Amino acid sequence: FTRFAEAAVPVAEEVGVRIGLHPDDPPVPSLGGVARVIRDFDGYRRALEIADSPNFGLCFCVGTWAEGGQALGKDIFEMIAHFGARKKLFKIHFRNVDAPMPVFRETLVDDGYVDMAQVMRALRDVDFDGVLIPDHVPGGADEAAYTIGYMRAVRHQVLAEAA
Image 1 (spheres, rainbow, N blue to C red):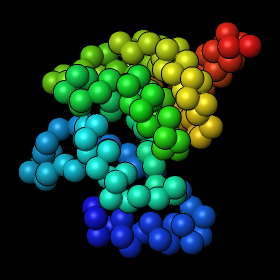
Image 2 (image 1 turned 90 degrees about the vertical axis):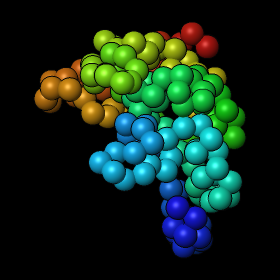
Image 3 (image 1 turned 30 degrees about the horizontal axis):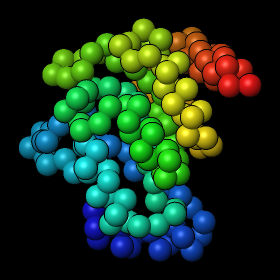
Image 4 (image 1 turned 60 degrees about the vertical axis):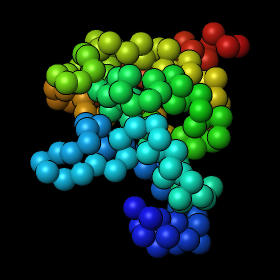
């Protein structure tokens, strides 16, 4: 990772591109015999220290964090508060799962164990201004459209609460 950051970050800065680091998904120490690198709060924190650039931040995957649960060092809301306050949240993968590991299933955005309206409130509270997208939507085009509509409705509701 350090070699990658040393090579890629200066180029990203030069051309004005932001790099958003996604955590290992699922966030386990090893997958198929291959060690995982960025799978918890400390991994993200260390990656940001190594890259040390305004052009390097996070692609924060709510679903991955939900999969990991308490084992990741901070919950979803602590992650948003910590990295959002530092303006290191570049993109949010807005998805949900039914339970944390060891066994989980991806769900529709409003059908998992994470309160996604509360996620949207946490993003509002840190003045998140990046990209918010659905991710791993189970089903087909209808479910993807549903997820986008849900995201819009929750965003409007949360912004109206603050007005």
